[in-house]
Image 1 (cartoon, rainbow, N blue to C red):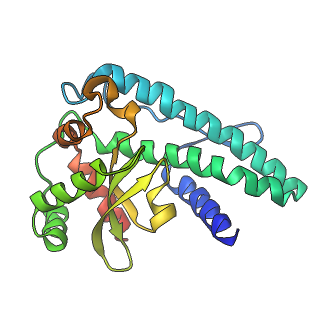
Image 2 (image 1 turned 135 degrees about the vertical axis):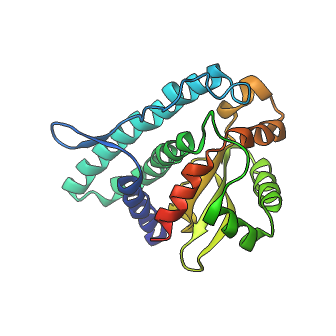
Length: 226
């Protein structure tokens, strides 16, 4: 139980640090972030229909469910109902993780993305993986290999000061479950690619490199190192 409570508190802390909030009448509520590009801007790599459904339906559902779950959790806290608090933790982790992960994911993508990173990020990649190509291959392999639904991540290990590749199941948030600070995430839930790539996940993962926003990833690294 202590482990679950730690994960829940860690997830809640990351939510405060990562996503946007809107002040409501009685409490702060999470909101669906706007995209900085049109739904069709990532074509042909990710089609407009996928982007619209992914953002306005799937992500919106995580946000709505997260707000409901947090409201119930606050009620349980006020009542001192520990059983209810523990019961709500899986929903908090799932919907909170979904909100965290997607909020990062949208900024990791850009119609002007692709190519290779520059500067300090590229130096760190070469130091920790040998080359950009080796990092790309390692992250792609880990992402494709996710069983069922989940995410592939390039993260920063603050303790060692190095970049790491990791995979998380379902909507588990990277930092809340591994301690790594998320820099680049690849969503491999079927709703992220199936309409366009069917069951050929490797083709989707290969295509997404064409729209990776390396400026955003570099900015995340700079923040993570502070």
